[in-house]
Image 1 (tube, helix red, strand yellow):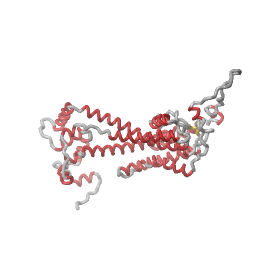
Image 2 (cartoon, rainbow, N blue to C red):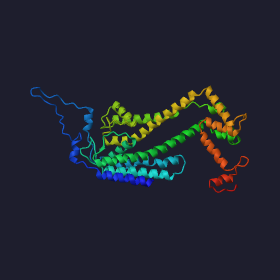
Image 3 (cartoon, rainbow, N blue to C red):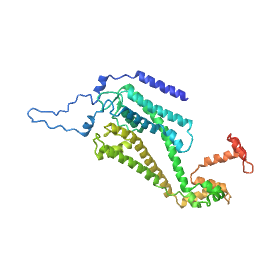
Image 4 (cartoon, rainbow, N blue to C red):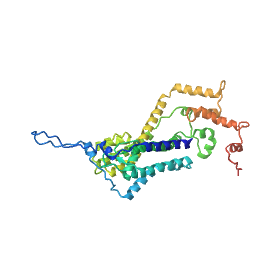
Length: 415
């Protein structure tokens, strides 16, 4: 099925590129603002006196800033900059498992290889084959390496200033398909990052509330190893704790630092021509991925800075929004817990014990606690118990050899 989809997409791409009609350079220039013969000289009526002094808006000033056809940055530095930017993205599928102390799976290797292919392939195509136009270009041409990474940052973060666009139909079709492919690859990366953040949050939660299974089922081992057992009341098990604002504050602090660095850079870097308020507006519009395009980088230094900080800033803002939503949900659960909630939890425990039961054993209490804390669902617990019953226990126990055999693991004799 996957091979069929790949062949189908390749066929559609090849057909679109073959049937697309190229636009002649003459026709293209007629449709651009830059090529339109507009006179900026004020109209003068005979006998009306000297003409007034022409004034230009800021947008007019931005439109007159042309980027050089050849980058002023040395080729070696351009290459280092491009490789560093690519490795920031391309290495994440390999770095995240190492941080989590896990092996890199085959899927993660494929995703990492696909991401590197997309990024390096985009650099080659955008700098050698596909033609682009811009209000900052004197004529249509391929991008420099600096412009390419700046453009790809807009694509990946969905900022989309619109200051650089493909010039011809074939290029527009290809860039459109390239954007879709890049977003799928980035979505996989975002999924891995999200899972990593979830694991970190889970570890943080365990550090606060402790491991319930260890305290309930292995209390005697805890006494031997830890010297004491963390005392936890039944109320603490079912009552949601007051959520901490620390994750939100940390993510907001990271975003604030990035935003301040953006404002300081673009309000002081020579050639950017932005006031502090304009840089502040630009930072919010850019890092929120809105990208209205009223203010954009005008220098190669600004493009290099923006290429990296678009990635960091948008990620920090997404993290802040996510932590805020999580805090609101947990705060609602905390505030809604009442005496009626305790009654519902008590009724749930009675349902687990069964009709006529007046005593609670260890496993029933454990199941009730896990469900009350929403650590597992009822279906998950039933699946665990069903897997245990499939091992055909005798007197409620299963031999360790049976468990190992069911997993295909050879049994090792105890030394």
